Image (cartoon, rainbow, N blue to C red; front, side):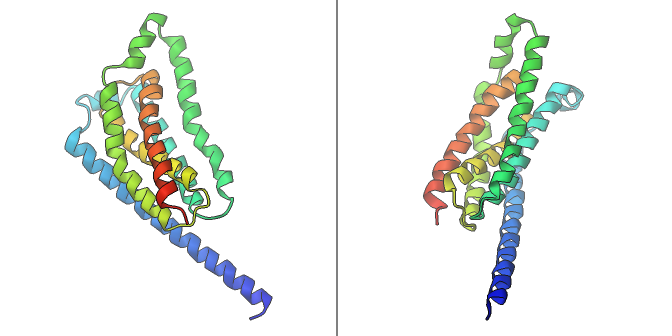
Length: 212
């Protein structure tokens, strides 16, 4: 085999590996969504006034943020499964969801009277949020950590943290359908804490189990 043939063979092998990793991640995210949905509908279920709430911008905005986070984290986690530097190009997309929630909080602070800020931030279900987002996210996170083991990530802790963000985004999307607190102040505080916890668990878990 001459040099050109060797290069072509290596390139073909790299394409096959990328396709295999992509298939694994698409299967993993489908299984993760199904698992989170099962936990959600057997424990919480949607809020009773969801039809009315769906007509309000604050309620719908929660899904914009959580789905954006999950989508951006999915692309980055899948890229981090490969031992190259292409993940750097996907990294900026992870800032979209935080930027959205920051802008929403700024608008909320301008719209609401100062004496209502604390009540909106604390909300009525903060402990439920801190309990059920991790509860619905831990199963998906386990699935994503297993998916990372099938790849060859050069940055396991970062990949695990992003997998935690992906799991948290999925879990928070389901939880948002039950959450009675629609203020961006509440979302920015309690959703962030719950999702950050999953990211921390993911970073530690991947550092231990997804290294190669």
